[in-house]
Structures are given as C-alpha cells and as structure tokens.
Length: 227
Figure 1 (cartoon, rainbow, N blue to C red):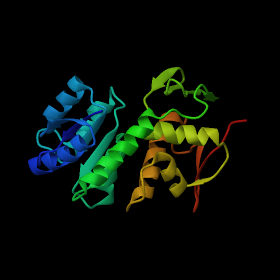
Figure 2: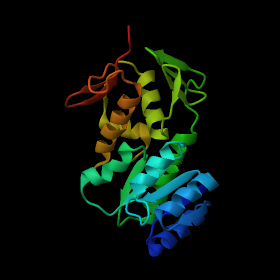
Figure 3: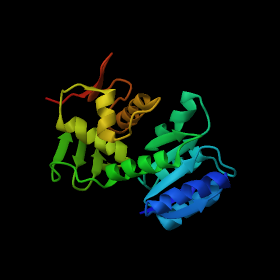
C-alpha cells in the first residue's frame, strides 16, 4: 500500500513516516498543498493523510480538487479545536479526521480501517439496488443517479450499502460507526451526520426534505424503501 502524507511540519511527517513504514506502507511526502496535490495526481496513492493548514494551498482546497476526479481515502489532520473546523473536510469528502497532537499508532490504525472499507468485499457482492432514479451496483462499487455516475467515498459507499441491505430498520449513530469502522472518539458520532448529509446531497431529489435517508430524532437514521 502507498500512503501520501502532506503536512508542513517536518517533525510530524518524519515521525509518522516511521510508523507507516513499520506497517509495510510505501510512504510519499509533501510539505505544501500545491506539491501534495501534484503528487496525489501523479503517484495515485492508496491513501492520503492531509493536514488542514498548509502553505500555498490549504488542505480543504487540496481535498476539494482531489475529490473532483478521485475517491482515494483521505484522512484529515487538524490542530483546530472547533468542531466545525474539524468536520469541514468531511463535508468535502474526507473519510476521517484526527486532531493534533495524535498518536502515530492511532493514525496507522485509522488508516488501516479506512483502507479496509475501501477494499472489502461486501456481502451479496453481485447485488444491484435500484430506487427511484438511483442505482447502486455493489460489485462495481458504482452509484448512478439519473444515469450519471456519482462518486462515493469508501465511507459513503459502506453506509449506503448497509442501509440498503436493511430497509426501514433504524440504526443508531454508534451502530453506523461500527459499520464504517471509524472507531469511538470524541466527536465521532457527529461524523456520521456529516457523511449521511453528503449522501443525501448525492441521492435525494431534495436533500432538505429527504425521501430515502430519514432521521429518527433522538435515535439515529433509517432508509425508507420506496413502494
């Protein structure tokens, strides 16, 4: 597996590099946003660890550009403590985030979890789910809306697939966290809200008045199968 680490703090990059190499990753590094974006396009890594605050081009803009053409798993690094700042990368399609200071071992564990989600073979691998003008081909890991391919991150795919397999069943945020393997940490349940908000924008005719992914207030979410 090949991981790209983009962070302007050389000490952090070198410390994290050691742990990824010990876990048998090939490690690429960049120290500013523009170099990181160019390397992501050129090297096609399996995973990107991306700092939020970068010189030249910040992590948010790098993430936005990458998501135009790629579903590569992205873990955001942030030194900010405001929850809105932590989650802004998720809204742009990052799969997970970790707050500085962090344990390099935890980062590697999160990376492995994200990669498992992106490469796992789902149950009923040949299934095709169709509702309204939405079609999910599980084997191809492809979502089409009104005939057009719509990109899903690994986390979004697994959440949607899980909900489709269990129509009308209510899931708590903790249960959906288990599906995504995001783990339990401060603010983790909030990330589920963001990923499902992103899914609604991709599959709902009107994301502000969802038809398929419904909130069960005080509990969690359920997918409503069309008649």
